[in-house]
Length: 141
Length: 167
Image (cartoon, rainbow over all chains, first blue to last red; front, side, top):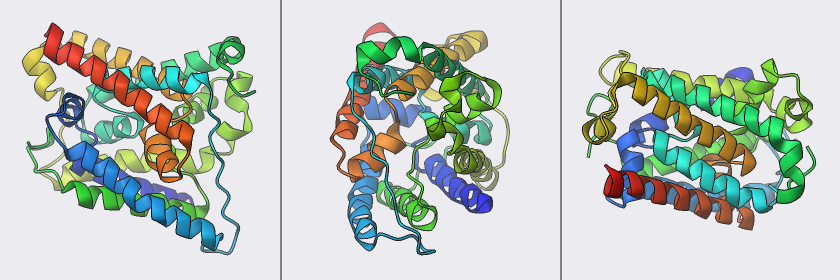
């Protein structure tokens, strides 16, 4: 199974790398509305995944016959606050989480700094979580 | 517009989008896993930080698939560079160099700060482009639509401020 995840990751990473999704200039052009590429990628991905999920949920089983179980994400004030903060970071770095790894693989050394920041940011959120939980209505950790 | 990587022409967006959809559905059908990358930061933190938040089930149970997947992403980028013109380390950053020109230390600090917002924001928002944008919206989860709008708003404001106002 571990090999399966690595292989799927390689495929995903290759697509992100060759499509512009992991490219600083393409991300800026998405936010500047000077290129359609990223909207096309995400739009097509959703347009195809949506019916695929409906079919899979109806079928209800994995390839080995085990039940398919999809955990839904809870929605609270943290989503919008966190979303905006992530968007700011996506703009600044020109990468989102997956592309950080892809860019390191490609040899873009500054992505290592982005990964360092991301791990520090995630660690900070973990440490602050108990304090933020009440005010933002976050689920119990 | 070409990629920073070896000036390559990007693959068509419909092809890339289809590729992402296939991988997302394969992950679910083959292994019952919901695509979501940002929890990977917590998976990595859980290896080093003993605080209870990082030892909770959602983090620890996901390590077995997410850490290999993240390794795959890195290898995918490496492979892409290798077959696309050769692998070589670089600090070149396209329009950032042309318009901001902050030098090496400035660029690395900039990236670290960007990373801080990404790490903190994705985990506070409980997901990123893959978990909310692709899976959540495809699964018609209202919270994911709202969160995706929020991060697009954050990105649009910030990029336009940087590239159309300040620099």
